[in-house]
Image (cartoon, rainbow, N blue to C red):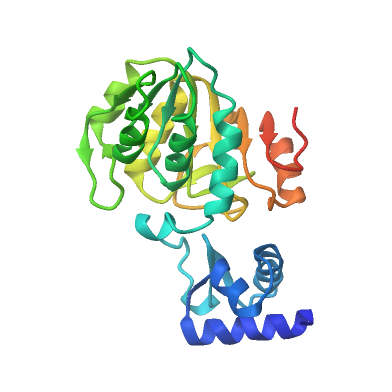
Length: 262
């Protein structure tokens, strides 16, 4: 299928459905998600649509900052990429070390990978991640207290942040809504950004987990600037230009298939 025809069909699909994910476009057009992402970038540059996390909307209905999809929806998106990221990130944490893990679908995949490791201490606000890790008898799991939210099964609030502030760990691994060179790591919700920021502030090494659909994307609340990130872990679909921009912005190291790894 020629590029112009793909672009026309993408715009036709948006006219009908108003919002579609990258996966839906790829399936409808019988092309790869990487091809769709390139098409969406070109169409956004020409003002014919607006990219949002995980897909696109027509420009007329695009809010200044699009809301994050519901947690149950996010758990079904980008699963191969999240597992790829989880494998790379899990290798950073060595036996005898301690880490923070915030709540999200990517960090849940990481918890499943960490559960295969030995001799770790994991501190998390995610109920699901804590349950996954608790199955491992030689893994010490600490679930942070706080208020439980309805969308993401996790604890948040002043108690959560206070407990984080009493600890010091080797690694903090967080998964924001978006990560770009100008705005850094960002979240859509204040409570999620506050917990992630507190975790990064009490760790020796700060790690951002972001699949390629999150790179170059901004949201409402900054977690940290790009220069504060020690390691960015992403997948093989990451755009080389974006990765180069992160290096210029101060990200110390990028882990991902095909990425230059320092």
